[in-house]
Length: 329
Image (cartoon, rainbow, N blue to C red; front, side, top):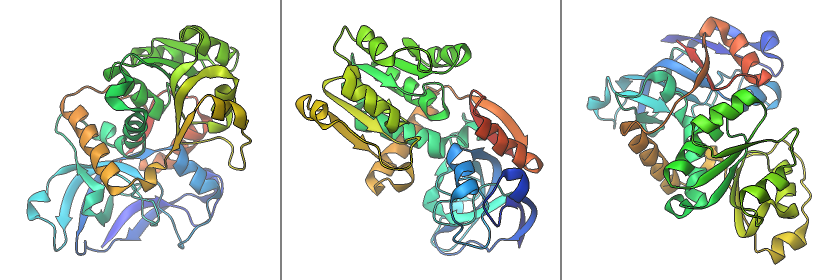
């Protein structure tokens, strides 16, 4: 059996290395399902991997996120799952075949039920943006966020947009960093009380003003290299915590220790690809509860066909779109 897919065999720019064609696809084995992909989500980590992450296989079909319908199941999987709408996580984590493909075979646990009220485009945003947002808010305290001041860095980003909504649902007050007026409007529509233009404004001063001079209670952050400086300069309140899930600096990040110690600052980090089983199960249930209740806004910034996979990657790299990028198959 073969499936139409996009892949690369070496690192480089999308237009130089992406290939379109047919690849072999095995029938689902024990505990596996074959999913007919409807939409593939394109995330910044996908394009970063294509550009620089060494290949462990002869080819890589990119993209970890997707949504579609289970078409066949292997032994050990209930036949009742055939025809089920699902969203997919970690499709291209430590394995070569991601969701930039008309079909994919993967362990059944990585194909999560997608409520009928949620379309496939939104489903393709659950794997990285959705799970990252839920786990970040979970580590930040969930119900304990009620009445607290929360900084969400990149509040208009794919992940930040969901975080802003979830913090607001728990009763927290969000101030979000943004890079433009359009992105500020997007963040406020998701529930942000205030926004700060991190490129032109003094972020620490804005955080202190927002919090009555003490600093915010929580920072949920996508760029620790920058946010760590705001923490040590008074942007985070004593006994506050920073929950981090990324950084724009790959190497060492210097920290000023005394402000962290004498203000009893808490630092928590996680990698969405590597959640503990119990955490992932909780996050999946929380996401699906929110989807069933239709409590989340979804934002699709651009849609492409598989033939336009290069344009999709370039759109993500440009960083100008507001909303998620998906490929329709």
